Length: 276
Length: 276
Image (cartoon, rainbow over all chains, first blue to last red; front, side, top):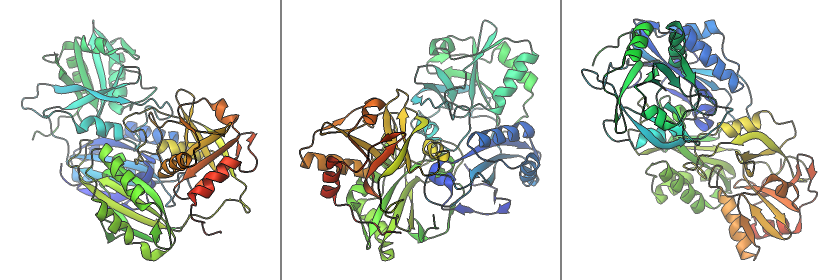
């Protein structure tokens, strides 16, 4: 993965951030990773709304909507890009207790994601992670900077693996390291509830809205692994790549993208990514 | 809390760290906070051993013992200090999957801790935190950079609070935000097991060793809150302050430090801190 094409700290171009940042020392911040196509961030208002919501959940006062929109606009000239925006609690003192509710902003723009890991793309190769997500309802759904479980889950997976789905301490699937999981059974959509752990992505909301628009029933609930493994179709989704069908989950082969997945992909009309 | 008196990144004096650091983005690293008195770090070998152990638990190759000793020696000229050493997974790419097992080193030296929050010191005022620690056995005991639970626990405590003890999802006390907890009942020492969550501090090991040397029986186990609340004596401990008696835990008053606590304090002979 290449180096960032732009880095801004509170609007100023930088290479580095304060060594005392609470983001580094405690993970005391939140972030969103976004897709910019031809200078426009996809779903920018939804992304900003989620970022501000998550900041508030950590007790941070998020910058105003317009300020964040301007911040993001500062990398529009890069055209296609992966844009990551972090809100990090300000303050440089030692000690867990916050000195302020103000947030610093860190913006990084990278190369855009590539279209697929195989050409032609025939779906994701996914595993069930041996890492179990800890249940912390106070942080569930929030995209915060404490991401060691995702690191652990991705550290040891076999070569050729695209992602891993993590379960929780009750033994039900929750989400992948890089997106949310959905499956289809008997024409009905299913996705785990994100109320004890896991991240609630913008694309998850979009898929849920698309299902409603398409009159597709969806069950949002904790459901055991065997239901996912026995599904007719399964996919992951995130803001960079939209919906990506799962081709293989451990030794379960799903084959070609199913009809419900294809309907949702068409409805969402996620921008086509540059091929590699 | 004042700014650091020295900051070194891989041995070089800096003010800032790379904006792409995995420490910031994921908390992918470990740390230890140490007490330096007249240029000497207290329990330096035990601290380095714990740091290297924790790094290995995250899949990092820790720098050699001698390299870390030299690193720490670079701030010896500051005399009395609080010294924090972080090992952070190297690599600057985007994405959870590590590119390397190598670690960058970040060293910060601050003013030494002050002797006490009240003069004369009459013990800590502690609360039971409403924040429950999530159980993640893969990270239990490790002093890693995912510390949002400690931030949440210390964010809202009442003024005049010195620390908060967090319990786990089974409703048993585990540890304080800044140290481990012990209590004495009928002449016997008790401390929670750190096998599902929480940090295992160097000072906790020293207290356990001291108890053995003093023929003091100690039970290391998950035990319910009422046993702690009904204890004869209770204290917190960490590497900066040694043993600090708990004067008050919520509305339970423990009064003056008890005889077992005083024996342990004498045995440990933690250096006297500068008074404010």
